[in-house]
Image (cartoon, rainbow, N blue to C red; front, side, top):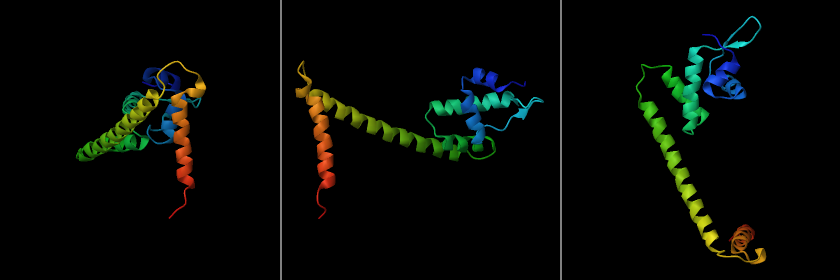
Length: 145
């Protein structure tokens, strides 16, 4: 099978510019070229791009994906590195979840400061946001002991 970049984009639901970027970054191998200098992709490109897109849907970085592709290209290696990479990614996700839970808690506290219909000048949320900013400025201007 030989398809052009537009068809590859359709089959994989990936933007053409992204495909070119993945090529430039070495995630996708350079395709063959037609006599008219069009990129020509094969089944291996489709499969590899689908793998990359699945990894991206799991919020893996391009570095993580490159490492997985390198391991995948050497199938006789021990999969311990794959496990370690995924364990590290899980830890990053857990840290982000914790940060998001803290953000949610902070937003809920702010939300509690304004419970009803009132004029904007009396809005507890806006006052809370301003207090937070003035506290941060005061802390940054405090003399160092």
